[in-house]
Amino acid sequence: MTGERGTIAVLGCGLIGQSWSALFTAHGYNVVGWDPASISQSAIEQAIAKSRAQIRMQGTDRNVGSFRLAQTPEAAVVDAFWIQENAPESVPVKIELYGRVETAASPDAVIASSTSSLTWSQLATSLNHSGRFITAHPFNPPHIMPLVEIYAANDVMQKKAISFYRGLGREPVLLSRDAVGHIANRLASALWREAVNIVAENIADVSAVDAALVHGPGLRWSVIGSHMAYHLGGGPGGIEHYLKHLGPSQERRWATLGTPKLTPDVCSRLVAGVMDEANGRSIAELEEERDRSLLQVLAARGGRMA
Amino acid sequence: MTGERGTIAVLGCGLIGQSWSALFTAHGYNVVGWDPASISQSAIEQAIAKSRAQIRMQGTDRNVGSFRLAQTPEAAVVDAFWIQENAPESVPVKIELYGRVETAASPDAVIASSTSSLTWSQLATSLNHSGRFITAHPFNPPHIMPLVEIYAANDVMQKKAISFYRGLGREPVLLSRDAVGHIANRLASALWREAVNIVAENIADVSAVDAALVHGPGLRWSVIGSHMAYHLGGGPGGIEHYLKHLGPSQERRWATLGTPKLTPDVCSRLVAGVMDEANGRSIAELEEERDRSLLQVLAARGGRMA
Image 1 (cartoon, rainbow over the protein chains, first blue to last red):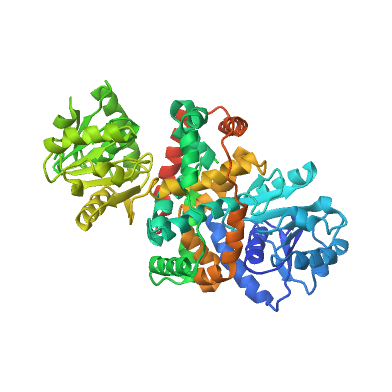
Image 2 (cartoon, chains in turn purple, red; image 1 turned 180 degrees about the vertical axis):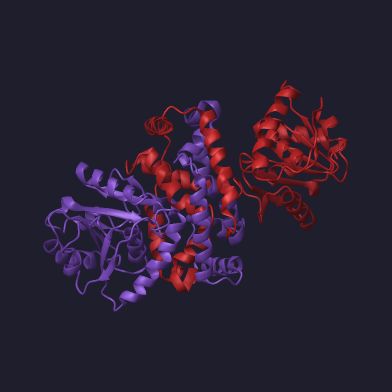
């Protein structure tokens, strides 16, 4: 059977759109894509095929959905029950696009934005029916990384979104209110600030910082969250004991963390350090290593505690 | 053959000391422990046996070293070529201990402190021969987590420490200068500050924050460091392109991150949220889940990029 699960529109077929398309077709949906650039259907199909080979490693590529390119966003959405928008991170660009698709789409269709840096409030007000609009931010690449961060303004859409992305083997997480950077990029940004500071303050070099993360807290956070880690760090008394006895020392620690500036000097040390760490490997080679390792970890980790 | 690789003294046989002892004996060293509390040899041996079963899952428990308790720190160090100190995080306590062992130990023996919150400079000045003193901070539990953060004041000791911990299957990382929290706990503290802020600002609840981390950036950081992730986030132009084009937006993002206070209200919401996430599982059960998942991820990840 082909695409018996319905049609999804993918607006914006860059890296994120292609990755979503691979995931959607692997789960038996037909995808109709649209992109303002003159990207060819065969180029997208090639990218999708490559990603689907990775999805098969996760054992989730059971179905066959089709992919075709439409000439206009209106044509892309006309049969869709779900619209995943991956346009550039610009409020006017996205709003213009919503204006075009809102009337062409079925009134029941969900419009989901993959935006990483904009918020629901900045985008939703432009729609005539904002209740069907959500932000659904994937972590790159979405066909491998499980996280999808969701903000929906009402219970019905929250449930619909959770069910849809969970059905794709993703791990949807709900925001209580919309915020710049959602959750994950706020955490990533907070960590990177200190990672930059450690280099700027000459405490350690770039590759030492990355190695410490990968073999220490990063490894731990692949199976257990930050709050839960402090629960276990508190011994038999857990987080309550931790906060009571070590809370003040954490506040003192926070006060010692840096607020670096990305000055030309700091930037050139970051670039040199990353080049040193890359050790001749190209971006494409590094991405391939990353994806291969991610798939191995995903296949293995089981029983994670979130 | 038993312990043909030499003798290591473990000063302080709490959780960290027990875990180190399991790792050391699994690599063929004889361990002589000392602890000021009246902990029995058989209790420690039981803990070591449990940890060694986990080490065998990593395929690194090839040798057999013995463990025995000494009555005094002086007796513990007398035959040791390496002294791993895990005393309470108190400068006077550690300094008093160094005074007792420095003269009893062989002049060649290395004194390595597992301290997480104190620095080399705070501790080294008390020794007559500070050149042989290093900080070697493991990430808990040290028989599972690969990271050991090292600060040594001279090249010879740096090389000695790298070689020693690498021989134990660990991933030693060198600091360029000593700093509170070394690298990993600075990163962990920076991330947790924002994780607390997200709860305090009501952007998401505790379990959503933890799930976002585990299925998003935490998963990614188990195979690739933070600096390298931004290198790949820069597209074909890498970190240089990223810093040039998105550096300013990162600085703006940093400015929006929170500086929460651990007020009674925030603390009670953290406690309630963690209890909700634990969902009835005890600390011991959660630790067992964590360790099992960590061992699975460690066995799987291979080809990591640090």
